[in-house]
Image (cartoon, rainbow, N blue to C red; front, side, top):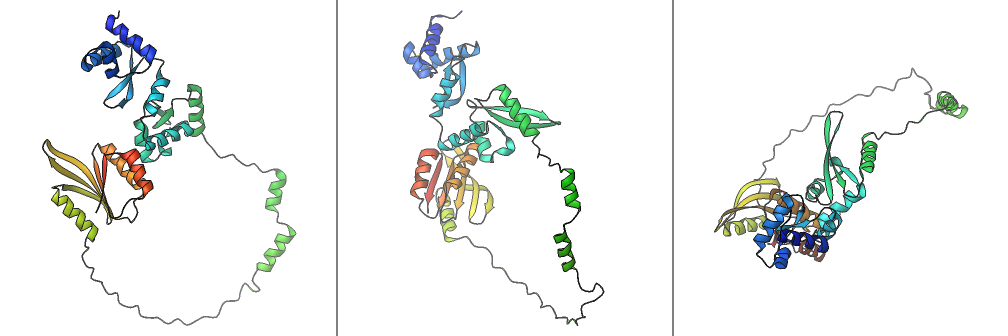
Amino acid sequence: MLNEKEEKIMQLVRMSGPTLPNVVAKQLNTEIYLASAILSGLVQNGHLKLSFRRIGSSPLYYVPGQENKVRERLHKELNELEKKALERIRDLKVAFTEELYPQERFLVSELKDFVEALTINSDGQELKLWKHYSVSQDELNSIISSKLHKTEPKQELTQLEVQQTLQPTAQQSQAVEEMKPLSIFSEPPKQETVEVPKPKRVRKEHAPKQDSEFERKVHEYLKEKKIEIISTKGKKGETIHEASLPTALGSQNLLVKISGKANVAESDISTFYTECLHLKKPGIIFVSNELSKKTRDFVSKNIGEFVKIIKM
C-alpha cells in the first residue's frame, strides 16, 4: 500500500514519463535527498525502475513499460562516438565480441539501456554477444544459429563435368605437347663458379637516442607542473605515460600522451579518450601542431574537458 507522497510520485511518473529526483522534489516541495529516498523505496518495491545511464549524477526513474521513452530521453545525452557504436549494433542486430573493435566493445558495455549483454555456450565454449533492444527472441535465436553454423555452399559436379575435368581437350593436349622439352636427356653446359670473398661486416656504433625538441619541451612542462611519470608504454614519437599530479586533496592519477605526429586525427584522440574512460583517469595529449578545425569541433562536441589537448 502506497502512502500519499508515493502515490503522488507514481502519478507524476505515469503522466510525465521518466523523471529525475530534482523534478520530483520540486513537485513535492521538498528536499532532493528526501525525494531520492522515496524514489529508492519505490524501486526496491518494484514500482519503479532505474536507467543504467545517468543524466548528470542521477539515473532516470520510470514505470515498467516506459523503456522506449527512457531510450528516447537518453539518446540525446550520448556523444557522437557512442551514437556510432550504437548504430553499428543496430545494423548488426546481434554482435559477437570478435565483430567489434576494442573501442566499440567498451562503448557498447556502457549502453545497457539500448543493448543487452548475453553469454551463450557453444561446443563447451562461452561466447559473449550484444543484442540490440529491438531484436525479438525468435530473431535472436535465428541470427545466433546462422552465425554459429555459417558454412560455404558445396559445389557438386555432374558426371559430365567430372568427365570433362578428367579428360583434356584436343587443344589442351596439343598445348602440353608443345611445352615438352626437345630432349629430356640433354643437360645444360656446366659453368665454372668463382667464389667471391664476402666483405667483412663492420659494426656501426649507434649514437644514443635523444629526445626531440618537442619531447624535451613536454618533459620540461611536466616537471614545471610537478607531474611525475610513473610508467611508460608505446614507441618513440608516440608514447603514453601514466602520471601522478599532486593536488590539495592528494595525488591525482592521469594519462599523458605525447604525440609527435604532424597531424593528430580524430581517431587518435578518440582512442586515447576511450582508454582514459576505461581506466577512469583524465588525460592530456601534447601535440606539436595546431589541430584542424574539423578535429577541434570533434573534440569540443565529444571529448569535453576529460581529455585536455596542449600544443607545445
